[in-house]
Image 1: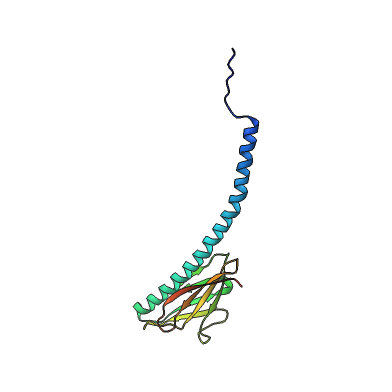
Image 2 (image 1 turned 180 degrees about the horizontal axis):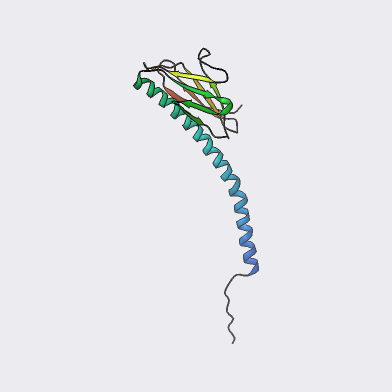
Length: 150
C-alpha cells in the first residue's frame, strides 16, 4: 500500500484560475476608468463651487467687489491671483453679464452688499450631462442644478 503525496495544483486548476482572473480584469479595468472620469468631473464641480463661494465671502468681508474670471477655452477660473484649472475630462461654458466680459473671458462679479452680477458656469461630462453652477444676482448665492444630455 503505497501512499502518494498530493500537494500542489493540477494544470487544469491553474488554467481555470487564470481564466477567472482574466475575466475579472476584463470587467474591472473599464469600470475603473469610468470611475476615475467621474471623480474628475465631480472635482471640477467642487472647484467651481468653492471658487465662486470664496469670492462672495471675500467681497462681503473685505467691502470690495471681487471678480472671478472664467476662461472656458482653458477650463480655468481665476480669483484672488490664483488660477484653478478644471480636469481635462470636462467641458465648460460661462454665462455672465456682457458689460463685464473681456475678450474670451467671462467675469462674474460679487459685490460687498452680498449681490452679484449673476450668471453661471455649465460643467459638462464626457457623456453630455452636466451641472449648471448658478450665481443669483440679487443674493449672490451659489447653487447647482443638474441637466441631462440632449
